[in-house]
Length: 366
Ligand SMILES: Cc1ncc(COP(=O)(O)O)c(C=O)c1O
Image (tube, rainbow, N blue to C red; front, side, top):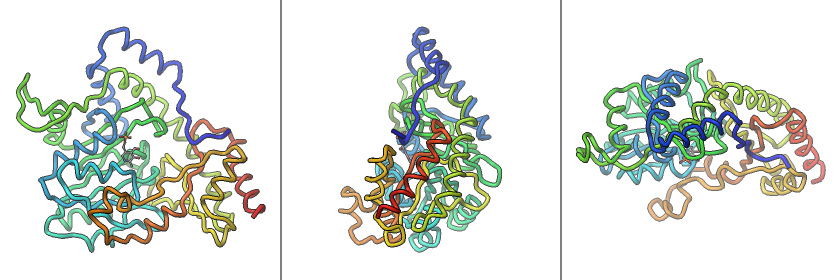
């Protein structure tokens, strides 16, 4: 079976976790501090703040910049938390469509949705494909918006040679298993802003600025030292894992783009993709069968695939009630036709060749 993710820990990662367990330092402590320093250095940001998971990273970031009722431009084609955490921070997500080729937020659509209440934009580096950062920064300056980058899937992605974690104002990561680096449950927020950094650290621990002294709202969103110890070890092999993902994706790009009806995600100009997911659009008419039929056939041939995502967030029941009239054609088309195939660092060259071969076989069978 060829699976969608390689989530086995290396021996030295297990040893690091055991060392922390033996030390009795179970809560957030020195290991978290070291992980923050090493992660910040790796991506080139001034500060990094560990937290419970990627959802918490987004929630805390939104809490630092939003006032109740503020509107936030979000792509609808993303994981639910990008948008739901805006609601949890008392803001209002305003759903934007995506570019049909890169699958990233479409600024032309976003511009139409600006109002006097728009306070922030949340570009998602979806599947590890970096957004066109210069264009987004210019857009945000023009409209006086804060930027929260959702980099949950983009560890190691770069734009014009600079890591996506080094940009202003807030960059949110997840370390969920399946991500390019993982600790179990964990998150990180990178920032270059000292005030935001301090606020994030307080909010992560109940808004406590002195012992049992609370000057702002907050939550318990701390990471544990066990997770940080695993994260520090994973960080050491991030480049190695990324280079395998990139090699796999390069092979898939060459071979799959040649198959009629299969269109891989277009990489942003000046961007270096981190290939958290390798996703293609399946054009039923040209390919010969639908995305769902292809997925089923590949499953029968021992290749596990996944759909990221089967709905735009604006189509989720919990949001549909609020925003019934929204139509985002590129998001809806992608949700119906997108398919992710394995690309992770645990695959061998023969696994990757098998994936391509199996897609060819399915095409011939229909
Ligand atoms: C784009 C995106 N944003 C946010 C998250 C939330 O991260 P976590 O699962 O660590 O809470 C994820 C993780 O699945 C994600 O893919």
